[in-house]
Length: 178
Image (cartoon, rainbow, N blue to C red; front, side, top):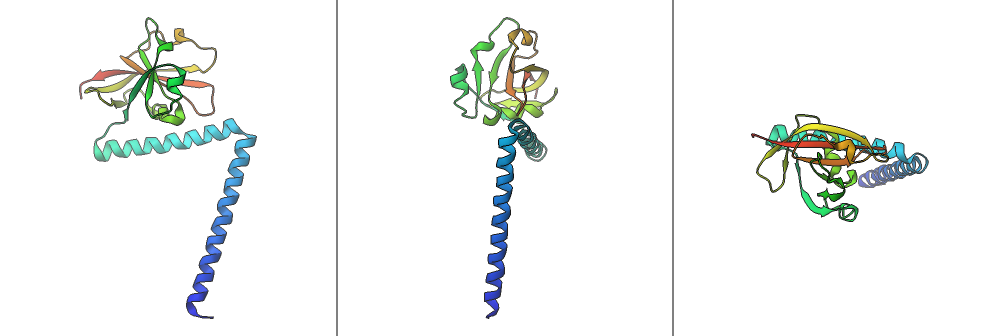
């Protein structure tokens, strides 16, 4: 057997082993999702939001870039379901004492707000101001109403849902001096 032939066989075994491991890991993940969908979604969401938060930290510290969101259409569920990476200004949230509220599905970019705390500074694409999280509300996805949002601070609010939970997060944003 030639010297190069042995290396080729070893490489083939490594690739085959790696393929088997990846297939097994995929089968475990599918099995977990089928048997425990909410727990799997929650675990995925926690991991994804941690990674997003870490990326935002690096952007802010290294490149002096704040997290930026885009406000898109005004409307309801059909506009929200477009999942185009924007926050939809939800007409169903219009009520006296509630700031203009824009929502995005967590899996469509809305999850960026899940790690924000009061004091977090953000940008809204197309607006000159820098905004700061000044208020946070948590509500149930069911059995809640706009009454739960009355008095939410800020000029505009962003909303998304937690992964695998019956909870929504609303963050009230107010413009601040940069």
